[in-house]
Image (tube, rainbow, N blue to C red; front, side, top):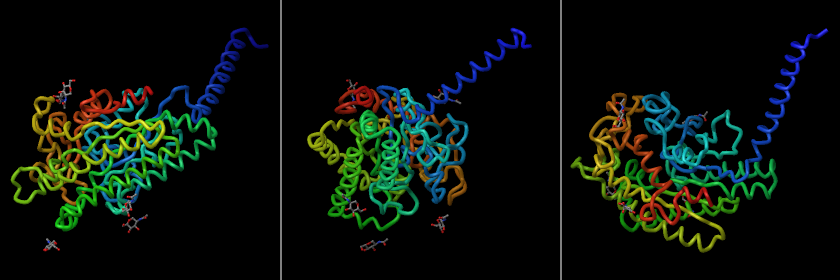
Length: 374
Ligand SMILES: *[C@@H]1O[C@H](CO)[C@@H](O)[C@H](O)[C@H]1NC(C)=O
Ligand SMILES: *[C@@H]1O[C@H](CO)[C@@H](O)[C@H](O)[C@H]1NC(C)=O
Ligand SMILES: *[C@@H]1O[C@H](CO)[C@@H](O)[C@H](O)[C@H]1NC(C)=O
Ligand SMILES: *[C@@H]1O[C@H](CO)[C@@H](O)[C@H](O)[C@H]1NC(C)=O
Ligand SMILES: *[C@@H]1O[C@H](CO)[C@@H](O)[C@H](O)[C@H]1NC(C)=O
């Protein structure tokens, strides 16, 4: 006969079993039934937002960052993020009390209730930008549409509409569309008549993607405008004669983009019922830090932490790309730029803070905190 102690033990085991059984049901349900008011985060764009999708595509190390010293400051191993640590969407997720948002292509990732990251290093709004090496914005959109139909299958149309309507959609794209032509082809292609055409095409394609996300139920969108592209170490180094000046021809495209895009967003807000957006001024944020690094706690605003050549502007960080030699600074937090194209974790955090809680002269008409709370 069972002694009382044994019975207690059995009961306890049974309770523990039942508890874990129901708990697992709840969790299983939780996969597709988010808690009330849960605002998830969907992320689109280029390497500023890529948390590792390019680890899973057939590309070259030029568009990957899954080797040291990438990731060293925070993760202690490389994740595919183009920084020494976290990138902008990681901080936004943290501020929104979400876990880090996993790359959509990560093979072990199946619960999308907190969102998904579709961004791809090197990607552009134009399919032609680094075609074959990256996941262009249109393909990122098709991944999102697959996910939306999965949600509809699992939780029904009405629930999905509410769920996708509460989510925030972060998009950062365009820099590669403008910079890559200067790096790969004859830049006299980029005569002034062609410049406005290029900007219109990039913004046209971006606008199409925004409208498609809206059609699926997306309502809240977060953007950065473009930084002074020609002042990024790789493009500063590309400037003929190496005078140390920024590459103004490339920055001019960013400026054209930054004039046109906010007007499109205002128009979308008038056209699309319930459409709300936030755009943060990355142009000013980058310029201020590049020009006055010490004001923001940095020691160096122009030279990258990791790379080689002038300004460490050659994308050789980690020695896994075509150039094998590289220099690495002592403390990445001292630098605005971690490698020749990308911000250090510390700079990413500062930009993320501006997106999250920036005042209306920097982030408008909403900041992300307000968008999440809508
Ligand atoms: C990967 O890309 C290379 C070059 O673009 C190509 O030769 C190769 O067949 C591709 N591999 C796969 C598995 O698709
Ligand atoms: C670039 O194109 C222009 C106009 O077609 C031509 O005159 C020039 O020689 C080209 N430069 C290079 C480096 O190919
Ligand atoms: C998107 O870009 C492609 C070129 O990549 C262009 O052919 C197409 O017309 C663009 N679409 C819009 C809506 O601008
Ligand atoms: C790197 O610099 C940051 C900011 O100045 C400082 O907080 C941190 O302790 C430094 N890290 C190391 C390892 O020295
Ligand atoms: C924005 O306004 C705040 C005060 O509200 C000010 O401290 C800050 O310098 C301004 N930033 C810019 C970029 O104008």
